[in-house]
Image (cartoon, rainbow, N blue to C red; front, side, top):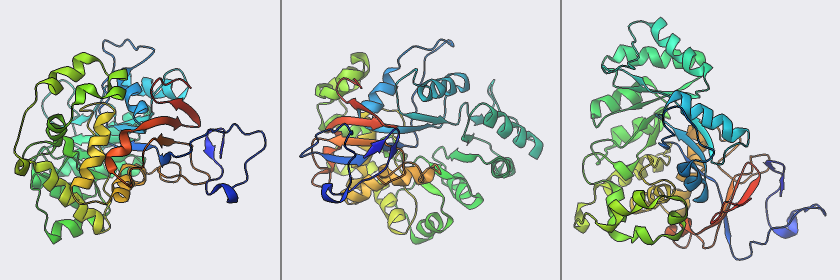
Length: 371
């Protein structure tokens, strides 16, 4: 039972009191799951400072059941404007959060210079003022600079996500210094107990993004090889053909024992089993469907379907500090849910059989996005 944008009751029909004036939606034979939380969702954006009334990446993600997106690198001006338009009901898409423009340590026109703690604090205050709930600390070569950004994040109440750039020693210091999480896979897929325990006991999250995993073939190639992606009906409704066709019609082929993303996800499963936080990030590789590929890859690494769904929903909400409001179907939480035609506990590949999506209490037909 949903009132306005909150769930007020959930459970077997016999034990839930339904108000007499409620609008009833028949989902007999269907499966309802929480909305998918994509914590590493590069959504792009319109260019040259001109915003459209619609954005196909936002529509595609919503149609595939992604109800919360966190974009860890985007144009500050574009992404926060889109976020506010979505919140105001002026644009359709998942609820949207972002780091805005990254705090980049390399020599670029937008380099974020951090020579002192005041520098770091200034950057964090600046990003918080424009709407960031997090910042991305990227390619700061000095560890003390990264630590100053972390300290400023704690002072301002902003999460700090890094990027390791396929450098294991970077990743290790990210965990030891207390970043919110490690974004992208560790470059060494076989994890031993010291690393697993470090992840689990530090409560630093792990977002493996195996769809673009380091150290070998990325997971997206597996699905281009094993699926006729260009035939996917829901994908074709919202994703331009010139995006879908080039990579799906002419495909890279690889041997069955050459898929590195499976080894990456086996490591993620170790962290999960040890009590660590492992969450879904689809990297914007193929908007909407890519989130399901990432979800299916968790199962390829050894997760049970219910565990993969946990990583795609509640774990992501917890990682973003939003698990009191999103991530599961419970009274009091925001009404984000997905109605599936087939049960993903029977086969995890059923998660893309999306029939309806509810975000913030608004229910949409997935195939038309009519409310």
